[in-house]
Image (cartoon, rainbow, N blue to C red; front, side, top):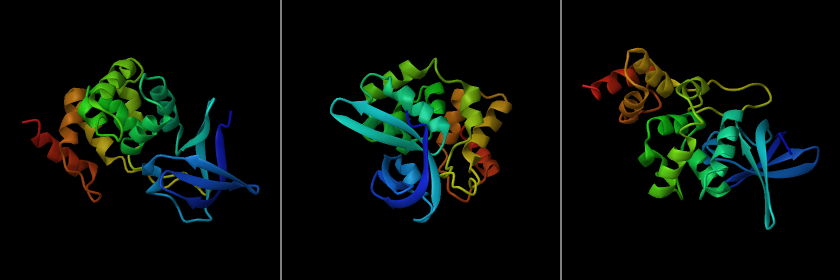
Length: 204
């Protein structure tokens, strides 16, 4: 088992990167969310990994944090969701966002992930409903996080999750809080207060 790989970012493609570790290049498949925020080539990064082995294939999957890795493993246990589907889901949703979708029973959101149909999304809700909690979803604070580089991690943009947490603190249920925030067209320059105000309009 390879728990993580820390090396120099040598190249990247559509769904993978190559890390040089002491002269050995490891090709690692990663979610597109990570690809979008990769540091420059030559940077040292660390990815938490899962070594997938079957009779006809061997692949190494990498994630920016342990939460995404843990969710990837849970998704692999869902009937009909293989590594490609699990990676597609985590390319579209962070682990915390997926947990919130499960809690809110939002199959439509999950079905927006590439390669995931309505039936598979429903199966994910059923299989994961007892494996995630509201507390886990809020504490993860993973939205728009970036790869942890050797010098430390960049700040995490948790405005969306902060807004959801604020709504629950105001007495709204987790499901309706998630749906209200999810209806807001969130832009990169919006902070949690602006998202909260917009979400509140969806509750009246």
